[in-house]
Image (spheres, rainbow, N blue to C red):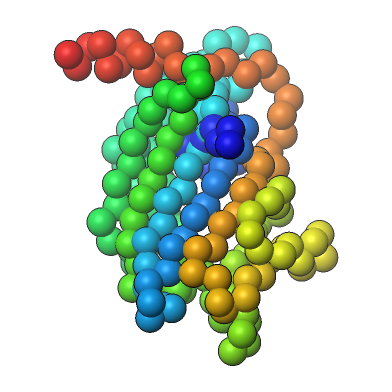
Length: 180
């Protein structure tokens, strides 16, 4: 499974950072209300129109997302948040993990007694897969049967893909070599 992501909601939040694919995985505890989540961003990149802005994008990625709170904005009541960047298959990816005590803290709600739902903002993400059913363009939510204990969504970024994509992997490798 080629999941390249933690480039983190950047593209649509900053306009310069982007990712190819993202994966949400929410594993529910036996109580059906609490659990743990993993959000992965695959192939994080800097997008530029007229010049190489990858240095400033790398700084934003580190300062605002990895070491800041930009990723947490949609998950304000979660706990044990961990974030990391990593390389897989020659691509820079990112990951955020956290635990939640209530479905709503993870942005998941009960549609009825038998169904979970999660809203997917079509301005930011396009549903491309997962183990739930998409409501389509008219109803941008994902539905799961209550028997599912792991809820997965695989969206792509809905942000404009114009401009040249510049991988941030060399900046990442440089940063980890400076730490050693």
